Image (cartoon, rainbow, N blue to C red; front, side):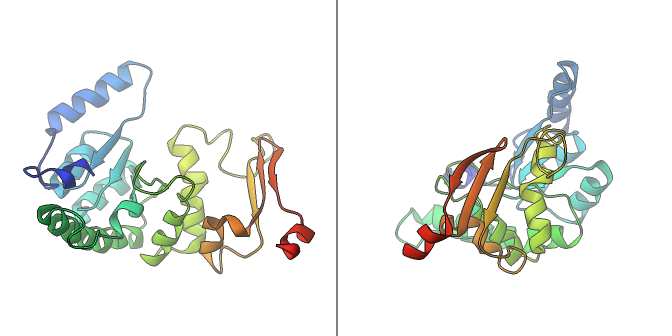
Length: 224
């Protein structure tokens, strides 16, 4: 998002060439096969990053069908950071250049990312740290659903796919024997209303590695 705040740079600018990105990925592979995440907004930068072999694209606001074709062929993961893209600041609260750039790219992002979802690109949840208030990251799921993703696919983006992307799929991300017992219980059906997962008032139990860290008994909820 720093490009949006720049008075001179544009999201369409290519920060790194294909050759430079490929070199980064090669070095990461040489040092233990580390995954590489590319923060890319404009179409050319996204395409360079994909072809350079990165593991995931953070933002991806200018993604087009050529990018999508490459991602589907390579298994590249999209982390769309919709918490930063879905809303623009009010005019007058930021400099004019920033307001105009933000509005334009918010419109581009919503259209392009919705299309990427419809074509089946693998998506993992991420909010671009600092773009959303701490503890409100699961609002990202509702943004995904707003742009056409099913609630189940949104939940998978925040669990299974996110765990796999972080290299933790063998330990968490799904409820299976032998994995860490991380789970959230809410008092509504997220497949009917995804918003319940993002509202602490609806979260009645949280377990971390099998240890309960939050539990709101029914009688406490009635008295509240």
